[in-house]
Amino acid sequence: MLKSRADRYGAIAVSIHWLSAFLILALLGSGFRAANAMDAATKAGLLRFHIPVAVVVLLLTAFRIVWWWRFDRKPVPVAASPRWQERLAGFVHVVFYVFILGMVASGIGMMILSGAAPAVFGAAGATLPDFTAYPPRGPHGFGAFLLVGLLVFHAGAALYHQFVRGDHLLRRMWYGG
Image (cartoon, rainbow, N blue to C red; front, side, top):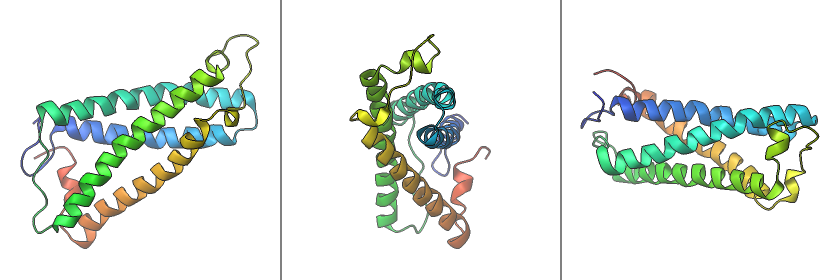
């Protein structure tokens, strides 16, 4: 089943969700490592991974938004779930989209303003700039920490539903019937 049903997410939504989650974790890891790397070659190598993966996450996020908007509908809320939890869950998902798009925008802004692309992608003699000298660096770094917090909250809520409430919420976001 490619599209979602009333009781569970479809294969396309599930695939986008878990692929995005994995790639965002990889982005956070590579981004934090690049920010703390002292060696320019190490930092450039991490950014050579980080930037294309960020583009893939941007494309997945855009596809996800279009998918929900035009082609699919989310399952009905979990039975006996308080309305405030449903509203909070919807808010958290919108905030995820805003954060992801903001992180991509600030990353692009940093690359454009700093002119770092030649150094990142291996031009002879090019050196990496000091990214902290460019205005998008602040929101990009702070956004990464906020994104970690949002991910912890999101995963915690899913685990709460799965194990404390026992409503098997995670089953809705996995393959199968």
